[in-house]
Amino acid sequence: MARYKMLVLSRPIEGKEAEYNDWYQHTHLKQVVALPGYISAQRFKRSVNMRGEDGYPYMAIYEIEADDIQAAYTVLETAAGDGRIAVSQAFDYGSVHASIYEPFGDVVNEEKQYQS
Image 1: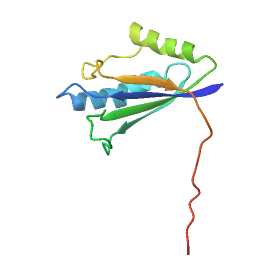
Image 2 (image 1 turned 45 degrees about the vertical axis):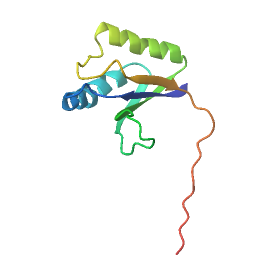
Image 3 (image 1 turned 90 degrees about the vertical axis):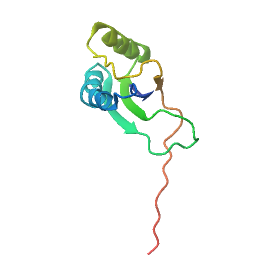
Image 4 (image 1 turned 30 degrees about the vertical axis):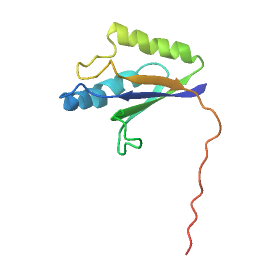
């Protein structure tokens, strides 16, 4: 089975950040990883805005394992439509960016060298 990463960049509705974070961390991630093929999820909060733009303050990365990534995505869409995935009024759906990526190239690591 192939592994994919789904990247979601998002923000809360102004004034609803606590509600957004609670829903995302304690409800949404668990509901998504309960779906077939969605094997892990982790959220991140922006630490450095590198280009001076008003970028997304939050990111989530989901790991997907599937033979057919389009079918896995359809499962997610269906679950969002039939209520298996709860919708929060604190999530800014109008500005979210989400994409699924497949591996492209080898992992590159730098071996750490220490002088004594």
